[in-house]
Amino acid sequence: MNNSYDYNDIEETYNSLVCNAQEAEDKGDFEGAIKSYTEALQYKPKQIQLMGELCWCLGQANRLEEMLETAKKALLISQKRTNEDNIGRFYFYIAQYYKVTGQYAIAIKYLTLAIKNKPYFIANYIDSALCYKKLDNYSEAVKIYELALSRTSEAKVKDFLINLLKEAKIKRDKQSPELEYIGRGVAYEKKGDYKSANAEFTKAVEISPNTEFLGLYVLFENEIKLGKDYYKAIGIGHNLVLIFNRKENYKGGSLFLESVCVGLCKCYKAIGDENNSEKYYKLAECYSHINNAIKAYEKNDFEKSLEEYKKALQIRTGYDIIDGIIESSLDLKLLEEVEHYAQMGLKLAKVENEEEYIAKYYSYLGIKCDMANDLKCGEFFEKALQKTKDIDNKLKYTYSLAHFFIKTREYSKAIEEHKKCLEYIKDGAVDIYDIPSDIVKLQEVLDENSDLNNSTKHYNLGGKYFNERKMEEAASEMKIALSYIPEDLDAMDVLNRCLFSLKRTDECMEICYEGFLISRRDHDYRFLDMFCYNLANCFYNNKQYDKALVYFQHALEVKPQDIDYLYFTGASYKHLGELEKAIDTFKLAHEIDPEDKGVTQQLAMCKSYLHGINIINKTKRSL
Image 1 (cartoon, rainbow, N blue to C red):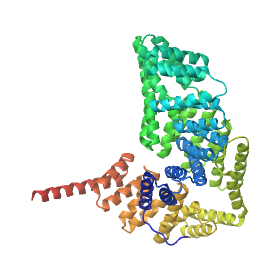
Image 2 (image 1 turned 60 degrees about the horizontal axis):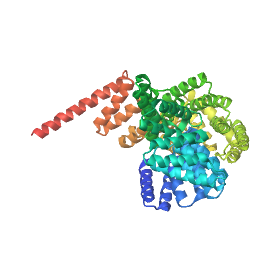
Image 3 (image 1 turned 120 degrees about the vertical axis):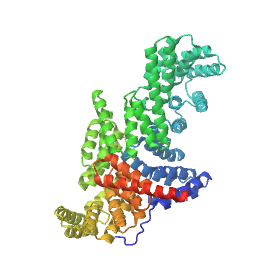
Image 4 (image 1 turned 180 degrees about the vertical axis):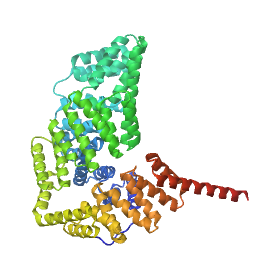
């Protein structure tokens, strides 16, 4: 165990490196940015946003092999959390490697997954169409451009995509007359001749349903501008709603649906149908909240995203909204929220017999249990596997189940699940996990039977002593267990509790700090709050309140409503003379548990102190 360690918070060094990297990136110094991001990741090796920035800089510096390796590592972390936005982002970076190296078919495979997970990122579509063009498949390129047009409302982007669409059309083996009609329709529209434009778009839609994303939408907008046949516009609008609510388009349709619902609201109002006008006004409001939530999530403002999704849910119940609430709640570590909305989604999916969504919500429940260190997570992943038919989801859920078995030290079962993953990859699932390497590592663990068995034997005996409150004996057995497997967090947690109970402060601080670093490094938060809490208490008992406060706050990051953590955070503020912060902390604790007498007393005491200080200061000023 490392005896030379520093208790100073690593945040200061980490934040400094991130600032240096961002400054270098802004100046176009990508090598400098790479250096600083890489050093920062040594402090937080699984920080997703940083890994994304590093991928971007590596790509700009043409260090493609490193970009691919970083993106695959980041994708592993994102997959375990089913964070779709980040999953889409790293699929995109992986695709960039294959696109730049001329492996266009493989690039398309990853870009398709990127589009599925991050449907508003237009670069996914442009690169996918480019790869199809490189393979001389202009028909597919046209379809991708049309899909991209349905995902954006920005005029400049639409014009750019229309030009690419025309270029793809010219190079197609067989000319498609519907695109000529679209081109003429766009020209008429720019001149303000909506009647002629509509005639051209109508011809295009009649010839090819594939033009419905562009043609029908523009036709709908123009009919409203003309204001002559609102019933026709309503028919087109309802058709658009059906198109965007199809399973393949559902996730990315909210941008256009907001606009379509606003248009339908106007049409119904114009013909005097107030009920339907109000209905589509509310739906437009719903999609506006969804779009606000998506924008907030992309900026990592998860609280705002959660707030907007909940507002949308008050208007309409849908999988897209429930998923958004769950994703935001996962990022905020609001596990009760995750469970509540996953159960809501599960109930809806069962009623509608949507098996892939049933599987998805079981997986969300599995992730929630995993984060809460609840062994039921394995049961939920198994249920998800029973429901899903999607090969990529089978791979994802099986991999999650394998890692559950690793946590429970059932290494043979973990290897079996990894082997199933290999079969799914052979059947067409995209390999993002580096399964063969995992199998080798697990086999090595099994081969080291003496260490594993000895560690487990002493761990179990130490656990028995701990339950019998024989702390000296328990601590001794846990130390032996750690001599075989030095970074075993389970053993470190029990040893920490024993040493704290025995008041062996120096040893307790050492094991807590080491456990803190390993937990943060591996993103294994099962015992992080207790490592932080006991380390903070050691500082607190030594009257080092500034250092105690740092680790009480770290404990609160894991369990923000824990009364003990809040109490000692408030007490630390009080000892440091920061009475207003102490009062705010005790108020929060009192709101959570109004019956806690210690909190009530401390709150009253701090208010009294602050009142006295204010009187003294006022008296001094009057002299």
